[in-house]
Length: 135
Image (cartoon, rainbow, N blue to C red; front, side):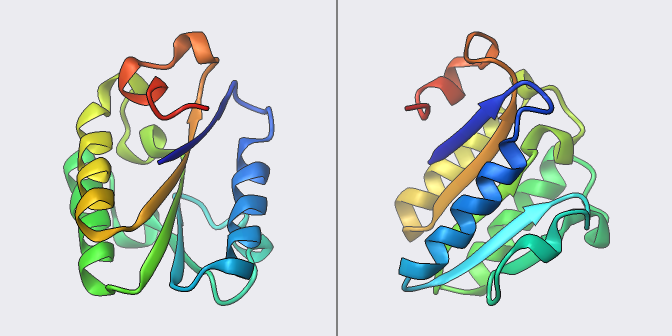
């Protein structure tokens, strides 16, 4: 798992989009980009699959867990899943989404998909369950 972090407005979304576009050049599998807004969808290069959770009425942690499990289950060729704003998507504080990170770690281990996420906050503000993935 790779984490892009920093306070709001520090360029995390741009950094994760750039990373997704760079990954496209070497990825052997599919790339999925998940967020809760259409704002940056056109900045991603094709064939990166863009998914807006609002289009699927995903509003809670449990719904999001099912959503990402469904993405992994639906296509064994998914190599990367990029998630911009995991806490925002789940309508929770960052400190409250530990079980989502546990789920993603299990999916990475079992299915080989790589998760790349943005998290709002300084390094000092990040919970331990996220810090272990920070470079």
